[in-house]
Image 1 (cartoon, helix red, strand yellow):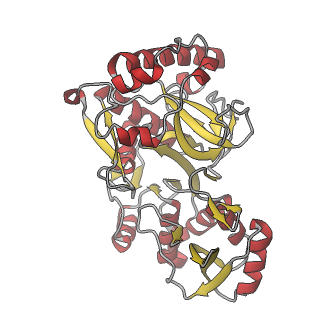
Image 2 (spheres, one colour; image 1 turned 90 degrees about the vertical axis):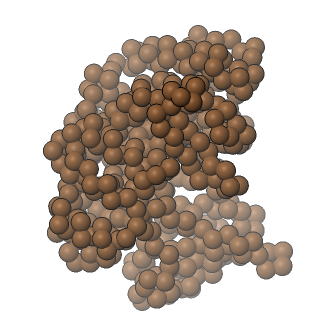
Image 3 (cartoon, one colour; image 1 turned 90 degrees about the horizontal axis):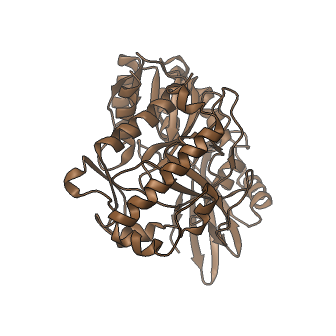
Length: 413
């Protein structure tokens, strides 16, 4: 089912013509309204095809921080209807703004996601994404209302209260992080499969297909993967449908590229690289070739329901989150993939990276019953190519999600 079938199934040539027109308008907006971007784009001819986008420089998060708070806005502050911000590692967040039109576009994107995931008008959505400066809560909220879905704005935290509301209000859908979905399943126990929930729209952190299988089995739901980032819009950049065969972009609003993490060269469909995104319709805070740091691949083949917009694979890691342990590249998602193949291992785990003298060491803290740590360590060494220390701890010891993003890595080097 589609929310906007005339757009979601638009013939590819027509879609690309629309993208080029909107790309040209976005570049002109940046040149004429954002001095910091005008200097970056000086001397680069206007694109005559979508392929010409590679002639423009990449935009990185550091560029956004350097323009804190409103230096990259393309609208006067008084035209901004809402401000959001992502957490900042140096004390200053990345600030983004939205005009009235931006908020309407965002709501349309989320409505597409929810309807495509199998939600129906008249349903109730338990929204456990955080409200506030984080884009998740309010982003999903307004999009659900646009789709005709009732919203319970629970936000994150207070798991016991959330369970009470799910039991009492009987929502059919839930939005939350994958790790929080598992926390709910753990707290609900045997009753988890008997709840009213039928669809979960999960995102804001990486998760594997094995983790999805466990969520679906324990909660008896269809779990779809939602992707977004505040620098581009928030949630709603792409999302799986109920078929779960790739995350469909809102490609009339966001143009995706995959580039080589070292050279920046654009890569063909099917090859894994860094996702680079260009907004095509944003008024307040347009971005041109934004380096997300997320590693995935693309396909431009239509999906089985006739959607013509590009689809991305699940995120397989982050170019800037890669751990180097004794010269070996390790991604947390690799550890999760391996752990979830082992019977009785809980999906709750944490990596602790430390240094003894000049040598890096990685400890994997996990939970489960009847697990041989040495056998797990051997399996991890086989898959990762590096020796790790495995400790099996009592249930409830490893940090859980209470609705927000869960940090899998504790790097104390």
